[in-house]
Length: 348
Ligand code: TXA
Ligand code: MG
Image (cartoon, rainbow, N blue to C red; front, side):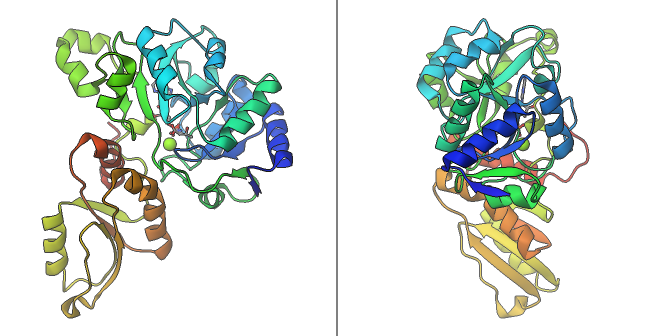
């Protein structure tokens, strides 16, 4: 059931559910999360089974403020503290060294833990209520079934899990794609999953250069690379964030060319592009649903998952997406689009 997130009774009920080891659907500024008490392995195991997520894919623990870090992580490097001071609350997750022996379910037995302090007022309110009841953090993956498109509205969460889940409604998510993940356990800050924060912005806030995985590997010898293996991140599986329809990611030229030459096929087609595409008389057999891709990367990120879901609701067979430019501002969007378009069966 969906409840208004600003309502104090609903918030109290949600906090009570969390304290009794149950799950709650929660808005954050990035995407909606499916949350449980991060330090209760029993509660966290319900997240894995409801999502259908393999139990070796660790979750992010969400905190009310940086004060709660001490319940989860130790040896926080200076550059991580700089990132926290400048970017929390916000769409940034840090991988830090975990306190030994805690949150085994949330971290899938890893030695590190992913921590994030979300800015959404409803997330803040629930985290505050829970903290006052002695729950220091909420484990929350995106509130979708494993491998599917992340939800950016309370209705999306309801479509995924139905009436039995208690969902707090906080409106459509402002950011729209998942948080940027920065690994702070390998001596230098390394981006594991791009989001809306650019490397330049992150480096400025960290007070030192933040590296991409590729930059980091280039700095190491092959032996060192093997020893410094990145912690596994399920958001880095190739096939992720996938709608039901087949997604094709095409340059503007290829998209227009494919469309004009696809006159003989009969297909229900969704196109998301900056360039307007209209049905021509020769392509009557194509049933076209064109939607404009926003030109601003932040507006585009906000619209991305809802757009993929809308095409699935219409029931298109294929979704053709105009490939955005290859710049830092578009890195998070390009990453999600590539995963949505991946058709192989092998995870990376
Ligand atoms: O914006 C977000 O990050 C959203 C909202 C709900 O906060 N959450 C989210 O969670 O995207 P999820 O579970 O869909 O993605 C979490 C990512 C996964 O790729 C997971 O592998 C990675 O974080 N992760 C978690 N713990 C990790 C660890 N100790 N080391 C490396 N990666 C980790
Ligand atoms: Mg997810």
